[in-house]
Length: 135
Length: 135
DNA sequence: TTAAACTCTGTAGTTAAGTACAGAGTTTAT
DNA sequence: ATAAACTCTGTACTTAACTACAGAGTTTAA
Image (tube, rainbow over all chains, first blue to last red; front, side, top):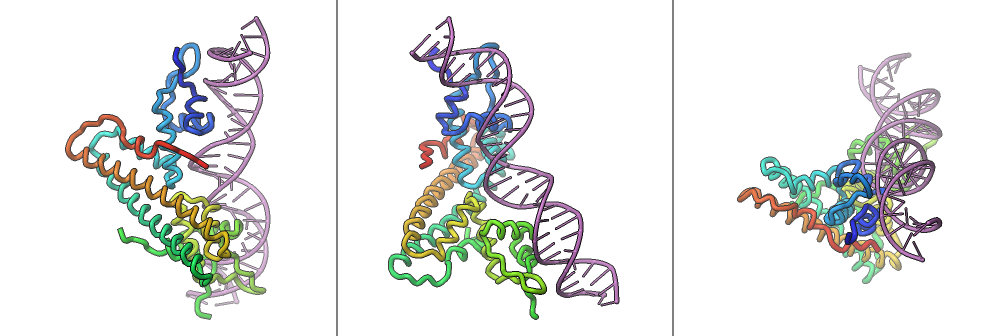
């Protein structure tokens, strides 16, 4: 036996708690391998990547529910996948836009700070408020 | 008296629950105007924008704690603001990158769906995986 | 070969971010 | 002038996403 990937190894490799892995199994966002008659469950290696993806996507503001939907797109049947993928893509475009605005504001703030201390009034708030649609 | 902005109007204008506004006040992310001896609290108009900013930033994956930090940058004193703003900016750059990758993957998925149903194996997961370094 | 480290099942606790509501006072519309 | 709609204070409930732990079984390293 080389080195069976048990839950602890999976968790450590993905940088999460063992309990988190179990939680993801419970809500069905990652598969739970069958329990062998004796011994521990063994996980496929790509489970680690799947968990990493989940954590990354969370940092981008997606809920586990939304992440589940994204993941399903990968192995769905072409029919509705296309439509739903297009929707997601447009949403993400909007998100990228928002982030760019925020980024530029921060940049301006940094520059202003360097040249002068003219702390007029916060430009950060103005960035993301109002209908920001220049998609 | 023209039309004093009371909490209900603020909430409706920002598209959130009155209780949410109170919650934000409780945690100090928006200011609570002083209670006048008689009558209701009156809010400055820019409270609405501040709440909109908060909601927007949340969709981008920021916690209220992080949003509070972003907002503080606006009226902070130049010294550390510059450093912290630069940190945030770099983080956001990373986020933009991740989103672009995800976006492109979705795009490919859509295209592949249009031409052929060669559902090899989910390319979505591969998009955001890789060095998850949480410093 | 046995103690340490791990896994399993199940249940319970925690934190962030709200949401609901009771009971009292205040405004406003009719 | 009074009912409807709103606000205030305070407390309690909810949901998502974990996190902890007990008590039993299983593996592995010294």
